[in-house]
Image (tube, rainbow, N blue to C red; front, side, top):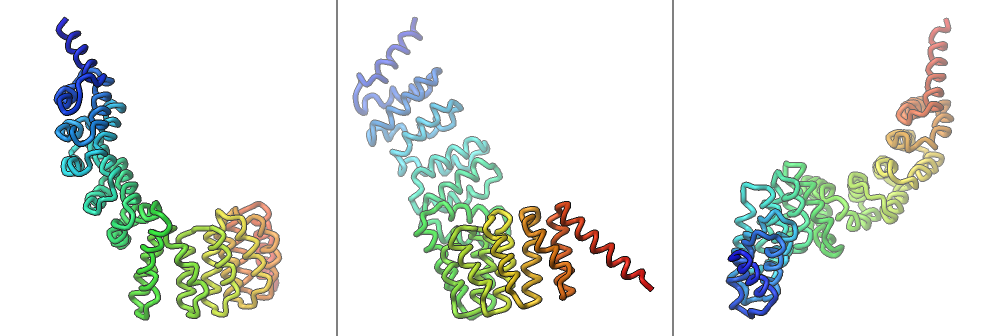
Length: 361
């Protein structure tokens, strides 16, 4: 009978019949109810009350540990209204032995991630061995925007590949304008005259990945050949095959500098596995290129595309009788990498022909 009376009183309070701050203690007690629907409703109502429910923050933080999805989500929604009051407790919860609890804490903190002081918290959480905690931290840093950029760019230098990938992923989730601002100082470093600094900038932009691509496009037309070459190489490593990248790299196939042309062939080859536009571009350049070295680079790039380059089998077979021995050898190797029956048969016939030539007295 008494239990029924208690539930009736809770229902009365949760219905809003007891108003303002006077209802906060009862709602805090309701967060301990044996019924998840009562706990969830109490959390929701505390969030709706605003500042006068601030005394409930410790209890709402504790409710984040609730294993009922409705309850911990309602608690998280409520805590968004108390970001200043709850941040210290949530930060401490981010060090909880339970990965599940840490994940809930970082997820909730991420909802008010615009606070610059939280960036170190998320950077630390990004190192967490638990995938959920790690992913929530990356997501929070992506939403944090500008305040997180210096720390993320610093993490691109980490010896830990997972941290470098995570930093790149967080940067990629930022607005385009923020991504460009993040890349700008590294582009300026790449433009410097010190060889070591240029090399470091090249690695940083490569690790930054997709967010760096738009800032690299203008470098493809830079008067300095070394900058054009580095931009080509970085774009190949990043592997973003959007229209601007493909168009920019295609133009560099006719570059006046030999190394730029060679690296462009290799970079386009890296994009060609996933972008069908690349193979015809490489084949067309192969018909007009005069340099033996660049021709071999183009052929090698086509071969590295594997089965994606099966439409190149015919042109490569014709090159097995090219006047340049090294071109013939490279064509044979690329046909083997492509690996279709037609390609393998052509290489086998060529090899048999060589064997007979060698046997001729």
